[in-house]
Amino acid sequence: MPILEPFRTVPRDMREWGRWFASLDVKADSLDDDIVQEIHIVDDSVTLAKLADMATNSFMARNTAGVGDPEILSALESQIVLQVNSRVTVITTSHSAGDERFILVDDDTAGGPVTVSLDAVASRVNHVYYIKKLGNTGFVTIDPDGAELIEFSSNLILSSKGNSATIISDGSAWSVV
Image (cartoon, rainbow, N blue to C red):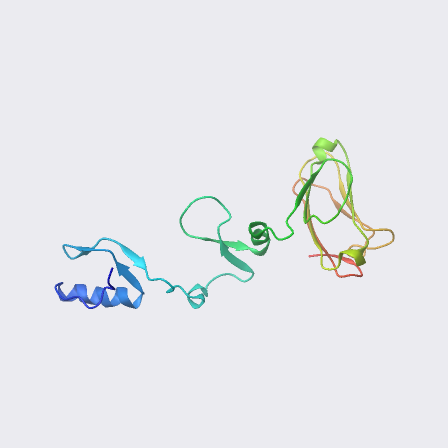
């Protein structure tokens, strides 16, 4: 499978195309009646510099099944793909948060309010929780340990279906990010 340069038996304009293909680091499987049938990217020709137009805090990967172009994923989506501390817990009753990252609260099944109790902030330094309210039935209260605060308040309440909070411990307080 030779690179498309130089061409010996094709018309001059095809030679120009050949140089263009070569500059793109591609190879042609076959030339048939002066028509390129297939083009392949040469190994190692896609560089990080060529991916420079990606958004900040994003990753190139595949989060869904299928073929085609890779997807540009957010940092959160990438954590799920990489399975970095991404344990998901679905709760239907009040719950003491532990090592999990994602807490989905099914308050419709609970039939009323649900409380997510957090550990002492000092025991969860740099730990991030993603907490989401799935239902319409009750409030979801995120309750720090003892007299600790979350965003300078004694608790955080998710009141509407789909509300969510991302919180992190800095070792002395819980912050919403």
